[in-house]
Image (tube, rainbow, N blue to C red; front, side):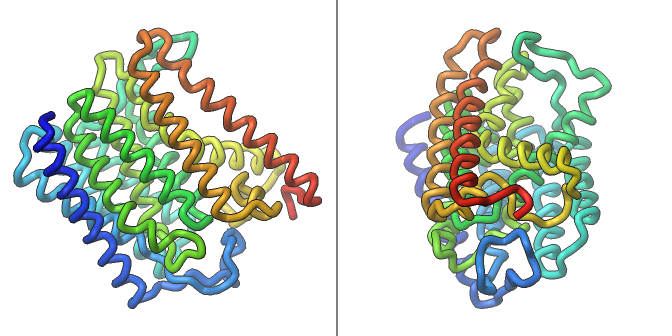
Length: 353
């Protein structure tokens, strides 16, 4: 890619970041309040506007519309491109309604599955999965089910993790910038453009979400972002014939996925209702044990930067070794878990407190 083209793209991204910031400011004037008295899972103590993710959605959709009109080389195949747009708008619309009316979890899950099915119907399906020690495994008839599980699971993981000022927004900003750089190097222009638009949206939103947050992303932002990153992971699988590159996105957001999965499994093992509100994610326990909000957020930003470095190593490794790049990321998350557990013991906190 020529330097002039890169400069043009960065200028366009800056414009989209401005659009995102303007949309967030508009949401501050039409506040949808997040009332801590109604939500056990929240970490804040006073009613705060939410729905700031509208800025991220607007920047992304505007960028994609212009991409479709002007840059044919950066499109997916027509049905896939339109499927991604329709599915992203659908998930954002339902999530915004959820921010306003507070739907039951089963309604959210159905909407997420419906949006995922739109993406699947357009042809975005993961055909094989690379597993350490086994290598690429053909999914066959399970491919649509595995892809559906991944998209819905990633959507909810990101949504569950959005409970502390700037943690998710900053993490996803780092992840999207890294993914854009990687995609450009691989010639994956659709993933490059989509990642750049998402990064621009988060860049416009983040100043409003830095602790103490003036506004929260809300489900409209977190569900939309989780959904789009899940879809981009499937699209990134096309970087190589064996689809090992699917692992790039899960690697970049490994800190969010680990915390969400650890918490889900722990709560299920303790007999808790996994869909009920709670304040026992690792990041929440770190904050409740006395770690500053900004410190917890910056720790996750650091994880994302480390994972971006691992993604660069991933690209240079021989194919049989690529799946093993997740092991250093897992080691860091296990060390973080041990650190949080030690803080919990010192603070006299238990999982059920």
